[in-house]
Length: 377
Image 1 (tube, one colour):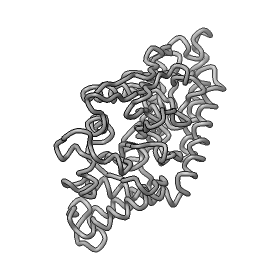
Image 2: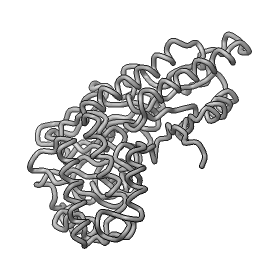
Image 3: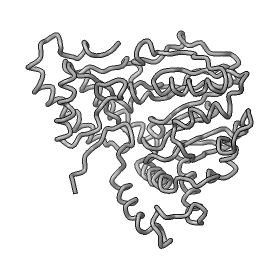
Image 4: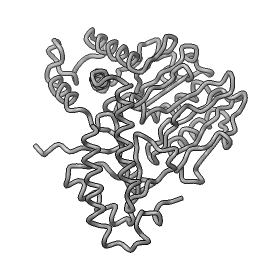
């Protein structure tokens, strides 16, 4: 078998070794069923127990209060770009969207199929390298909801606190990248959703927390598109992604053993600070985004030339450090520091970055050091 590498890819993310070991053992034998987890029936008592345990662990980890439903659905976060407005944005209603990245823009575009979308703020003109200030944000007093993306995976920005919303308007959040890396004030939101393949496990599950009074859709929908349908069926209106839910359960258990969300937040801060310090103390690397808006989960940076960025990835891979490519519409480099990435692993990346800079900077003209000429602004 090849040596196991450390992946900084934006997803599917690395899984802890302990989780992989538990999953591997369950492929052939799950519990006392005489079956492997890939074969487990979704109407069986064993899956009922697995599902309930998973939901209980996640509710405890995230601090989901009474009065909110937790749904585990198909389709990942992208399906929620459509499902949220289909359920909650009527043809005469308005929803405010904060467009702070490519995925936030896609969410707004899909919502516009169902009702009026007010782009309350956008940093597209600045290549999404920063977040909008409150002064730049124009909210609709009667909006049905305000949608924001808590962490911009592709560019590497992050809301430190949820944005404001007018009285009577609830927040909807795409928390795909930073759920379980920090605490969320669930009570300030009507709905939070996330894909599973970053901090929650592997691809295949859409994690949705929705306030109970928001389960009923504002229009008649096919049953599969209604949150109410899935809540009534315990997320089993159709065959759920059994194996992905099993991995979700393993990750929830692993996160609890590490000390829960509070410990993950401390670790996330330490990892990102180490990497940003390596970038900021160098005349070879340049961080892409505004320092006040930097993400603790996705660290983006540039080298002086595209050739050096390609060389950086090749040499890093030889050291067992992979997945450092930037988002396809952005380029440059990105290190995604999801929960399964240890502080030691980030330290290895930082050490490689310092060694690479020492070896390569001497051949560069001084005006190219730092990468400023290549960062789109």
